[in-house]
Image (cartoon, rainbow over all chains, first blue to last red; front, side):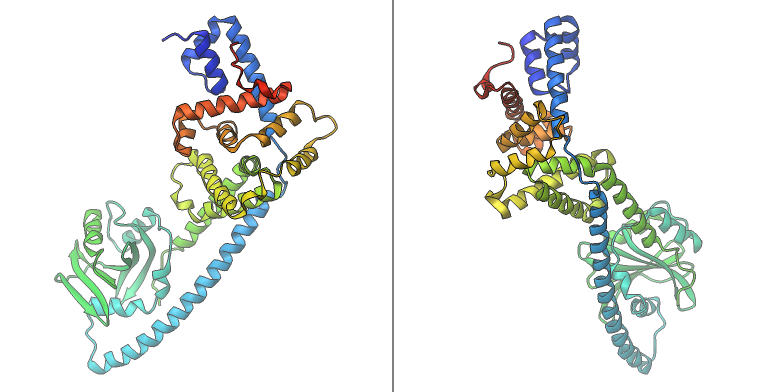
Length: 231
Length: 186
């Protein structure tokens, strides 16, 4: 659709830097509008020069210094909190462990997984997302091939679990952190359980067992589906 | 004791995030500072605005999915930060025209001071409703439609504001404030 002079002048008065194809075509055909466009662009150039005030030379360094300083302070505070939590968990685990031994330990995967929580309490506070290829590599090292990343995982380690090795993960869900252990080359029957105040579920996926532990079971179904789809 | 743990995946992730943020700050801080300055008209406030905006950007860096949208993303953060700052410090900035004019003189070297000086003063004298869309268009590279979406206005209203903003600046430049409403085609 062709553009007339009035429309062209309106266009360059509002968006002189973003002329559409119609406006460009009109400019090519109309010398007076081409002249008006040149004047408009001259004004835009003046506008650019006027707005280009000097930027403080050290501004970027100041921004980064403040960000890294605050981040370190935040990390230190978080580490201190984690250590306090770890101390609390270790104490509780010690007390519970003594009772456990007195009652006779049941060396189930569920029990070992719950016990393992006390060894790595910082896992639950991990933030961010572990890249999917790292998750796949961890499973590969235990001889398990993943088709895709099973969930948004914020913590990942390969850990001993009794005489076996397991992929220890934490998935951050809306209902809170869920600890997930995958133990290859073992079998179990599906069951929901409660161990020392921790709610859990264990089930067979592939040639291994998936154990989920949390304060509630809200996210278990979704996480289970994610792992089933990934394997 | 751990048997053969995965090589520090979280640390690597944090390092990658910091590297990304360093690059982002170095690539964008000049534009963002200028946007902040022209928004508030005060060097110290602009400095604070930019610092706070980057801190917010760092905290939500994981939300940034498209690196091409980084400028618009930062501009939005800064505009919101400015709105918060302006709410807290309300009328101590824009209305102090005399202070702004003193600051304006500081920018000018002996070879400057002509048209650019006039335009700068005119920009600072623009009402916020004209200045903000103009800055978004010229410094931020936004289209009319994008400005309209960001400011929650109609594209037609934004086009009118952009038209009037330029007319006011041109009028100031020609020394005829009353010419602000004269149509270019006349």
